[in-house]
Image (cartoon, rainbow, N blue to C red):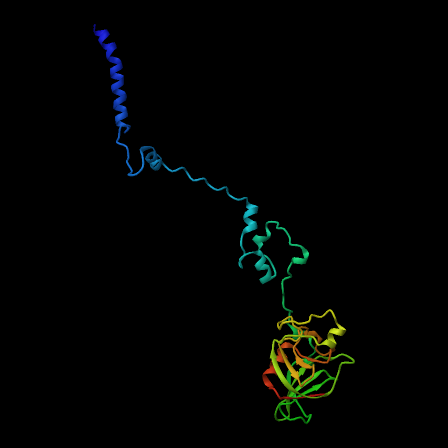
Length: 264
């Protein structure tokens, strides 16, 4: 009898044990209720969110290709500095067609220009006995020198470049206009000789008129700077009188509209 009773009670004990374990694990806890949705929707709402999918790390070459330079990218840095940052050069990049590539602008190098110019063409205050009154500009075309006459028999002397053979001239002209970093529009006569020249060029370091220009009377002639300082002391122009940029700035600050210019 006892064995039969024990055998009959075994399933009941197993069921009781399973119930206790389920109760301890919270299986019979009250469902979480959210107003307005059912239990199935509530189960989805309170389920743990899925783990985020990590983006694949780019290959080292791709990172190098998109790394910005100090100015916002290799292309901008090329335009500003003439070179690309080293990290932008690590990855090969496609080249634009030749007709679309932009050359980096570099102003003409004028460092140590004085070492390339003969001493006689360097700016200096000298004695002057030419007879012109103070405040006059005197151009000595043969010797490639320009004088700005000072008081007490003194003058500022500057080296100049003058017209090549067939383009020299003499006469007296007043300064009718002054301009800083002037634009350049080649006259029709010059374009007829040089059709390759631009029709107009904005002022700046690359402009052949240089840093300053003094316009002479109603003529096409000017006293102006140059982006080719090593041509000072030569017959090189189409009749204009060219000076080193630092010299024409010095002269520009000394003269005014109406200053008399004597070209000999």
